[in-house]
Image (cartoon, rainbow over all chains, first blue to last red; front, side, top):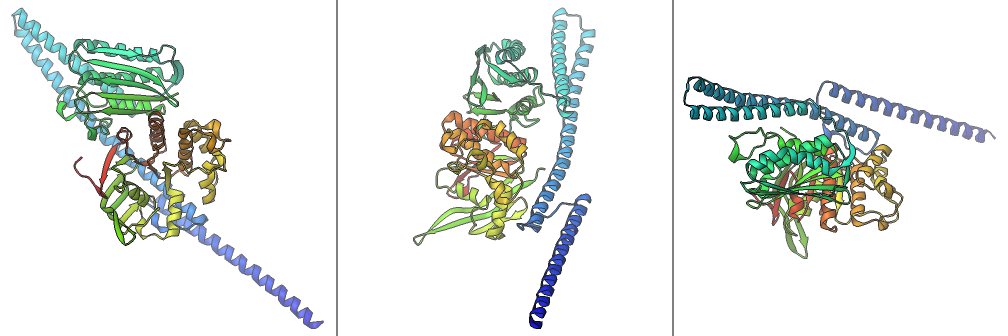
Length: 306
Length: 225
């Protein structure tokens, strides 16, 4: 009997010991976890980056640490982005102000010449030249306005279902005067009944920017073709020009902000047209694709989700 | 400037087949910036897939180093690589590799279940809506078209919120218009979720949609193109 009693007592003691040990382990793990969490959070608060390679375990802490690393990544990324935006803006301001200055200096010169000149034909010539400078100034200021809107996040997409042909007409109407000057014909094929959920105003702006670009690079008496096709997921607005085309290695960079073709660096423009177009399209969950070969013209596909 | 997410240094891979040595990669120095969309083109057998598999931690290099998102994959053990693949990389293959006995929803959430992570239902709903397969969740892979299956595979790759998406000939089995749509969607999604995208293709039209094109030939990166 006594032996059985002792055995039971021993067993009970064993169980109690086991439980205590488990309790101790649990406590230790929890302390350990909170300590690690505290250290990592401190690192984050001090603005330091967490070492990603430090922890690759497949447990709860491993997963939490992974998330913390992601948060730290997002932080640094945002800071970097803000810094770059600022640098870009600086560059834009100096670029535009320089161009504005040249415009004003030219206008001042013509105005002085005009006040001294008596020959009517010479005077007319100066007036036309002044007019050109005014146009350039106007263009520059408009770019500035669009750009600042973009930077301050004023572009708000308001989607509504409306016929895509109307949006297209809006864009074409804006580019026709410029195309006429170069005697470029614009051919558009679009079903009038085709409706699409999109922001009319901004999408027209995007299409206009691509068209404006097409006119810029198409030589006189050329043609621009526009077609609209509805596919399974996207509706594709294709704009084909007969311009000089874009070499393969440049096709990815033409959408960058402040990108200008190396050959035309001195003419008007600040290189935001295509950037803006892409931004507007991607804000509506769409994308732009370009197909081009040097010397054979280019096709820009603006794809918007149905 | 922007951070580098993938960096390989003199990366080489040799395979031994019946006493022959096949050189798949021969000293590749390759870099990808964060949130960049890079397409890799080249003839079949040029080492494209091998390179992609290395970046995704599916294979070990013979020599050289490969650093992805701050981690040196060449020094990792198989177990650590598995964790890396589950959390950091989203794979998309030519064969959609959907599990035929699971419906689309279960297929998409499968990698999450593997990692023991909670399923973010809102994210999944958003993904399938954007990929236009929201009405297909209850169906089985065999009931879907190729393009739809590939979109489901994309949703599966994106569900783990990977830092980097690796696609190996994702449109190899699709017709031209479906191909463009799939790559277009992939591009839109990668931009939205700020992910890096590397796509292998032999189709120039598709390669042109990337920010940068890299040509591989005989296990080396072609320069000056």
